[in-house]
Image (cartoon, rainbow, N blue to C red; front, side, top):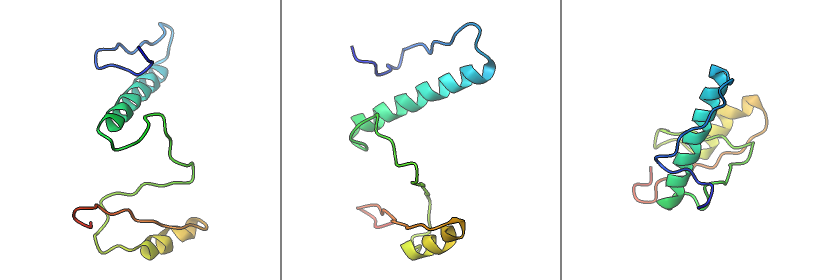
Length: 92
């Protein structure tokens, strides 16, 4: 068996862990589980892949929003580029 979590795996937290540490462990285990599901359904090639530190994901954009619109909005925080990835079927 590999180190991927299974649905019935228990989240192991040390007895002397603080509530924050236990919550972080739970969050990490849940995130790993979601990544494995995304890998299984083919949304990501590898459950361990991570986006670049400089990437920002924005969802539920107005379909009329263009790359340039986001560049204008976010450029006030520093140099940036935008690349809107649209749904293949709907174009949204």
